[in-house]
Image (cartoon, rainbow, N blue to C red):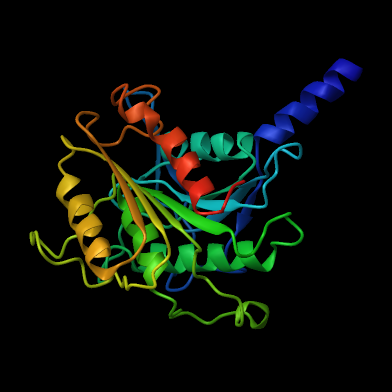
Amino acid sequence: MKILTFYLIMISALTAEPVKLWPGLAPGEKAARDEKVVKKGDGIKRISEVTQPTLEVYHAKKEKATGAAVLVCPGGGYNILAIDHEGTELCRWLSDNGITGVLLKYRVPRRKNQEKHEAPLQDAQRAMTMIRFNAKAWGIDPEKIGVMGFSAGGHLAATLMGDPRRDYPDEEKYKSVSSRPDFGILIYPAYLQKGKSNTELAPELNFTKDSQPVFIAVAKNDPYYPSSALLNTKLKELGASVETHVFETGGHGFGMATKRGSPEAKTWPDLCLQWMKKQGVLK
């Protein structure tokens, strides 16, 4: 019996119950649909048809808890979510390192007659607001809440960093709570450029000299590498805080680089932890 109890405790520590972001239908949604789950030969779990977005909280291990938290935004071109490869695995890694990981399952695929990021941004803003609102109960420092995004999720994270406006009806308890993250971690982000421009950022990105600190990791042989290079240049021109790591190889979509990517790309998690220490997020 004791062994079974211990086993159940360990399992519960590694899992998280989904919490709905919206009390009813999400803004603009007309009906809830069943999600679709697809696994291809690469073993990556992909989900689509998300109409009821959620967050899942992976609390930091008590003996290592730092008070920091990170909202994790998986990628997938705003059409699917690589929910484990760029989500669950990262939340567990964060938890192991004393950081509360919060997995965001945002709405996909792209909605007709909307910008690709419009509905996901609403979900990200609501998630960030909920994390900060519940910070005390969840053992989180409300001034140490960051966002991490991969590929399209990197674009979502970058957009969230610079857009404090909320274009949806807010519940009274959330109205005075900021949805602005305190730092951003962008891993092979996509869609940061204005169209095919190599000199202009996408108009939805609103960075200034006072923007939050940014960490970027990307491979040079990633087709979206120019996006990261441009953002790095623009942030430095503004005088904002940015640290960028460019790997010679690794391609796109390597996640934690345990199954794909390159040995060089596999170093980004440790580099990220070091950066968070330099920013004062971790001790």
